[in-house]
Amino acid sequence: MTPVLIGIAGGTGSGKTTIAKALVKEYGQGEVVILEQDAYYRDLSDLVPEQRKQVNFDHPDSIDIDLFIQHLYTLLKGKSIQKPVYDFSTHTRSPQTWEIHPHSVVIVEGILVLHWPAIRELLDIKIYVETPADIRFIRRLKRDIDDRGRTTHSVITQYLDTVRHMHEQFVEPSKFYADIIIPEGGQNTVAINLLRTKIDYTLSGN
Image (tube, rainbow, N blue to C red):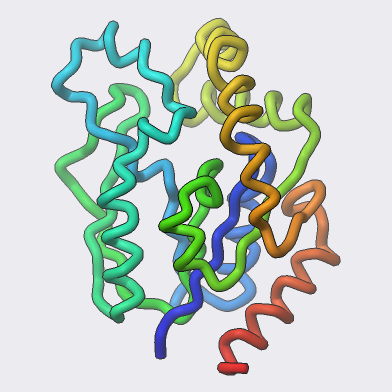
């Protein structure tokens, strides 16, 4: 059976990952797999560390979109892929990869997932998670410090210099392509239950 592709987009810290993980928990890891946009950042090993820090990581050009789309097509054909592993502390791609086997449901998650027409055309369900900017910023600040080894100053500077502007230019407009807009992310249990119903209906072949 051709897998169901679900795109979950929204601003940084909006709760996309929370929703994706809730669906994995609901259906089980054997049925649902998450393919994160963040795994497909371009490898910057050819740049010196100072140059890497100047890259706008919230711009669509920072993503290896060709590989991203190629892997989606491969999963749709029922074949496995080698998902990249990205090191956010060095902005380089690890030599290791994660093997992703075909699943009934593939969740494509990332801030720009609904931005690219080529990805939108592949998605069976398009979701945009809408959360207030202040909450999103706090979540991003905590994530980047705790999980990615960033300093408070660097996170704030990046947010003011690029993140906010890229959200307004690329992320926010993409919500108009969504089939479903979910306020408050993973805290919205009603929306998640409705989404589960939609997934069950799609999986049934109707």
